[in-house]
Length: 255
Image (cartoon, rainbow, N blue to C red):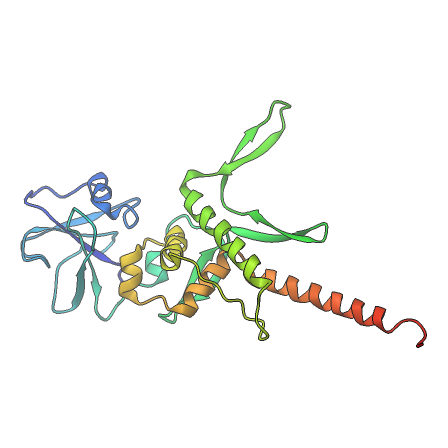
């Protein structure tokens, strides 16, 4: 199966280099290599170059492909894929990716979501530890230190922290069914950021593949902070407290 194909309008016969493709707003899709091919009649009706991440030589074949113009890019780039071979996680995975949780998205396939914030119990309290790569430094005493999160993952860490705070607050207001309700502005973009950490994919590609719905958005964000572990911890402690209260209330002689 092939990955996504891209088209860049251009009057130049010279194929674009990787740096030019990245400058055109497609850096998320082409972080290492680009395979270009001249195109005399592209999806915009003009000439340019079709691009792929390889190894197949890209081409524009509207009779068997789906193409859409990517909104908001001054370069006028388009993205497409083979109609009967929509890209999946195997074709889009980055050469370097972060460990986490496998979740099933709306395409029925399993995608690896990085675990950015891991819950750990300390002194009876649940705290979240950062699991994203960070620089290693040294303090004045010559001791190794773990510094701030690498700039590459700073936005993802900010999303994880924000969502952690939302969910911890909401957990105290869960309804009788135990379901936590939340309202996070920009949730689809947050999910796209999580996906783009491990896959060569952007928000428009996510939309084209139909990966998201209300349920999958929640599943991805919860995987980002390992919420199942948090939920189990809350349930376990609630059970222990309940058992203690029952024992205390049953002690002593009746009046």
